[in-house]
Length: 133
Image (cartoon, rainbow, N blue to C red; front, side):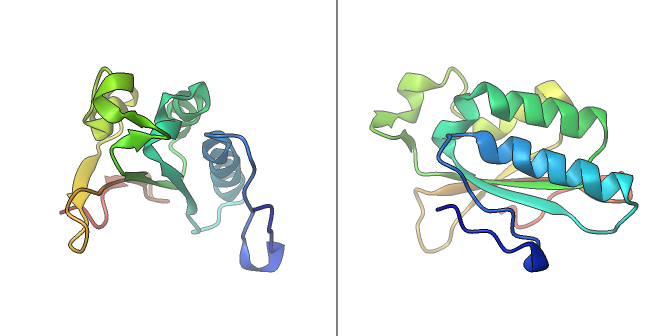
């Protein structure tokens, strides 16, 4: 779980649910400060978007226009609890409206119940969406 490879740009993972958003946001901040054309990427599950770290990272990413791609795999359950029982807004991509981040939901072709949400700000400062269905 705690595997890193700096030569490949892999910062690794940690055992704190939702902390990956802050790590990716920090990496995106460094990318921007150094003037690089790279993009920081984070993969997370739907349960993690209820953590304060998600909201802190999305706010800062929007405020500083950071090159960040967020992929949230929504399997409709946060651990053992159905999405509609732990989220006031079950359409998770709509939460990004609060941070002025355009977002969309896509569906996996091989698993129709799973949805992925892709949010990205390009290094040029414009927002775009990749892989949205």
